[in-house]
Amino acid sequence: MRQGRTDVRADVRRTPGPCARWADRDADFIREILDLVGDKWSVLIIGTLADGPVRYSDLARDIPGISQRMLTLTLKQLRRSGLVGRTAYAEVPPRVEYALTALGTSLLSTVLELAAWSADRHAEIRDHQRAYDTAAADTD
Amino acid sequence: MRQGRTDVRADVRRTPGPCARWADRDADFIREILDLVGDKWSVLIIGTLADGPVRYSDLARDIPGISQRMLTLTLKQLRRSGLVGRTAYAEVPPRVEYALTALGTSLLSTVLELAAWSADRHAEIRDHQRAYDTAAADTD
DNA sequence: CGGTATCCACGAAGATACTG
DNA sequence: CAGTATCTTCGTGGATACCG
Image (cartoon, rainbow over all chains, first blue to last red; front, side, top):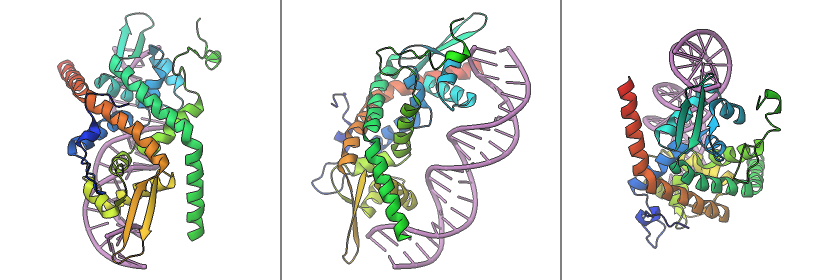
């Protein structure tokens, strides 16, 4: 499962007791990746790029509800981190394609797993939420 | 004309790949899980609970920078979704322990994979970011 | 100890208009 | 087509004080 060179959990204290603590570095890693893909649009964009290069306007059309501003901003951020590449063709009309880099692709599989988990468990989650909300309403 | 506005949805490219265009419910799944663990603290809490039940005050101490308010709020959200369980012991002084449920544990492994990815690639990502920022500064 | 309640600042993000 | 610029709203989260 985790055959990466760096095992995050290795840095977390595994005391027999109930007190495992995050090394600051671990928290930073989490924060870093969350900043990258924890927002509203990044994962959606990455998923849309899964099959190959996609044009700006196609992204705007295929991602429901995204504004031009957020699309541009999020693409810029993904590009900055090296997850997404941009190719502009000097044509008329102009054509710009965005595609996953190798780095982006490597993230895709993990992210897809998360999506699969969510799809798999979402009924269970919703049930819990409803039950919780009902119980809370009772005690109000 | 390869793609008019009318047939956008019909012209979905269904390659055998992971996902072509987002069906609305796929986007909803992503959104759901991102709402759950995409925030600043959820993953950190889940990770801290990895080894077993942890008391409220221990969570507050072991998660650097978290405020009491956010700890309470995030725990409530995780509890609502069935990822975390709460047990209050009628003692003096009072003791309350939080622990991952089976659902929470099943998420943990996926999330840990994401953290491992981040730990593994974070140098590469930072390099890209620096290069990008430098290039941007040049064109300014 | 294990929380709630309230106030406030700040950044994220939507709407809209404009440009190369 | 592929963006940028600006304005404004809105939610998230920090600080602080208080309660069972």
